[in-house]
Each structure stands twice: as structure tokens, then as C-alpha cells.
Length: 53
Image (cartoon, rainbow, N blue to C red; front, top):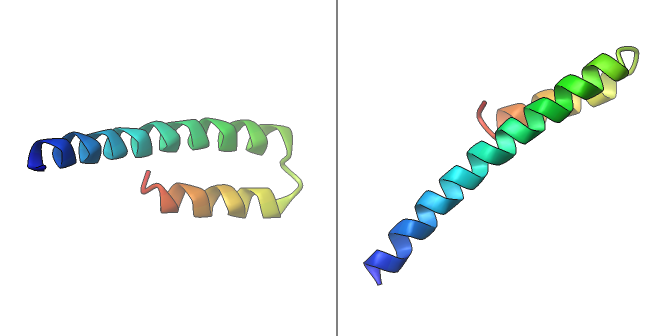
């Protein structure tokens, strides 16, 4: 059972890193496209902190 649990943890960690990078890219694009709206920027900051980027 330990051998099956360890790869799942590594996959989860890699998935979080990929999601974090994907979110940062989206946030940068949204920040460039929509500079006037503060709500989307705050959402991006919260999501970045959630993914610990």
C-alpha cells in the first residue's frame, strides 16, 4: 500500500505546481486585458496565494 500512496502524493504535488503556473498565466493575461476591474486582480492574488506561488 505504501508504494501506491507515494506516487499519488508526487502526482498531486506536480498537479498543484502545474495548476499554479496555469493560474499565474491566466492572471497575467486577465490583468493585462482588464486593468480597471479590481475584483479579478484580487481573485488572482487569492488564487496565487492558495497555490503558494
